[in-house]
Image 1 (cartoon, rainbow, N blue to C red):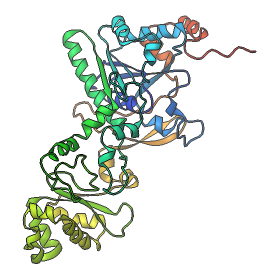
Image 2 (cartoon, rainbow, N blue to C red; image 1 turned 180 degrees about the vertical axis):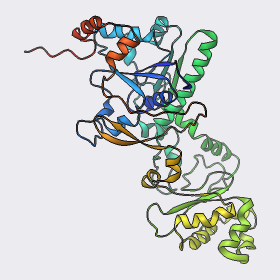
Image 3 (cartoon, rainbow, N blue to C red; image 1 turned 90 degrees about the vertical axis):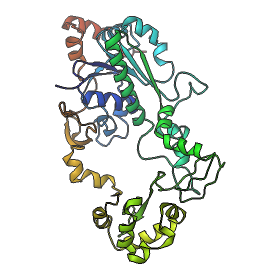
Image 4 (cartoon, one colour; image 1 turned 90 degrees about the horizontal axis):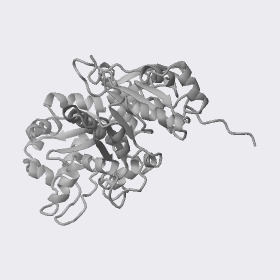
Length: 419
């Protein structure tokens, strides 16, 4: 049995943050009805690689959902929306500030219509505070949430991370909040409003940087390879430093291409074995590296010696040397590496699907493995593919009613009148 079987979600979200959340819940068995305006989610046409087909941007974020198109600018469309509200457990949206309110559906109105419904809302900066009306995108959230200022090399510009922590990270936070609210609803009978701001989500993912921010009021950060000092204020960009209790860094290996790197963590317990392997007894007894405090102080030289040793090996060969020594390490894996990796394929994290418009394509799999209810991943819906199905199965509309609503423009923008 699917974990969320019986949970129905009215998903008005679009682009990335909201769809990430609803796709995850759909993979766990929720019936997700993607509620789109007649033009559809904007990402259906963005970065399109196959003519007249939904883009990978859309297909990779909307698996296992049913699509219905509704024209919320018509009275008939609004009635369909209200009828669906009364059949759903969750409603989700990530519109700009005030969009649903202007359509006449504030949270208070939605709660009045269905007191049991849980509403999930993603905003760039939340619904309160001086930034509430600002627009946000992935990189804006990374910039304002603390991630960019701490990513990159000390003397260079700040960098965004390739992981979509602003959008996808916020979607994951929302999923947790929605499931918690559903659990409470099942005890109390009352739904509630769940809000996650992208800026807040990024701050939460930067928690260790705020740890270091407070440490800097009392001490330097000895684990950093760049100079730090008490009272310096901002946590610096530390390049590939581990930023944790154990020293870590990326080591360039042959043939020294852009992804020919192995990330190595030098734990206290493995130093003697590692030192003996790369530099023999002389390095193992070198006083500059005897204790972790010494290695922190002289880590740039330590990394130089390890890099010099690694010059003769590929990242996989160097990994094979370090694994028997229990040295935590991992190759920097590019997208091509991962798409063809035996471990990734074996864990069903890269799956081939078939789509009626674009044909065969690949999707990232379900990262949460449930032993009794494994995810079965199905393709994303075409625009409005399930409109009649949802109206009949969920709302009990008959063909005559659906026809009348369609004629009134409930599911599509009415044709423009001739001048």
